[in-house]
Length: 285
Picture 1 (cartoon, rainbow, N blue to C red):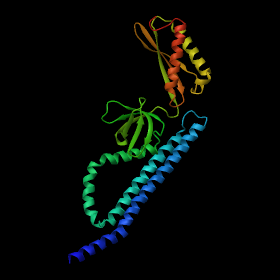
Picture 2 (cartoon, rainbow, N blue to C red):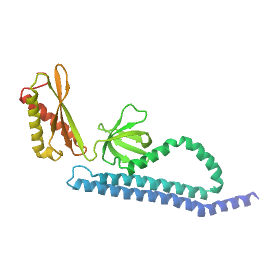
Picture 3 (cartoon, one colour):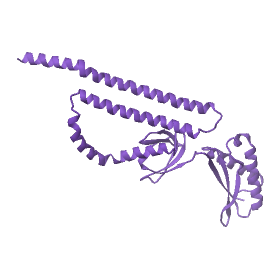
Picture 4 (spheres, rainbow, N blue to C red):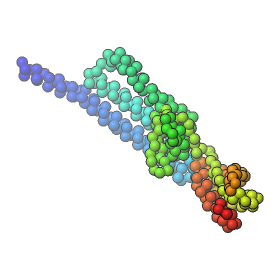
């Protein structure tokens, strides 16, 4: 009797392996191959976008290119998430679970998880609006105010999904921000940017002379072939912004291509410092 049961059990297991077991293996292998294929297509699309940017004469990515790059990442994430979910259901069916009988327990479990998953749903909804409203995209330099954090997250956008945004800071650190915790986004590389320079000079300096020097620096910078490609117009002198007993600050601003304000600002500071030094004007004079 025992030998008969053992033989029957062995036969049933063999039949299950040949039918449902084989189907489970094929499903798992299939989803792995599909995942690799989708990732390959995504990488090929993003490489094509990046190659088009590098081979063009533009100095910064267009808004359309950044949006396409972000969309490729988001669509890939959504497609793979749905695929994994559907394949998981099929595997459960072949393991003998009756999905119809799981509806009631799933409803209770879903209600319980709903309270704990509110933040995930919030992240997904926030990510959806971030993408559709084109608030930022791959390659943008952004400053993000995060709920519960005293310091803003700042860096270059490296990855955007419906749930998280990944930044690379100037120090090379990778910053991951859940989209639902984003309070405010400052995009430092959208359409155009502004380099603002505070020029400290002694309170006794001739303000007209200093303005002439700064105007001359701005004109020469705009005439420089290297800087002119980054500037949208000639840098302007805004005038005295701050005044103390010993010092006054004169603000100089320049409209630049998006993301180039830091490079332009550094170059203008060098030129302003050299020009003031040549005229014998310095902060310590």
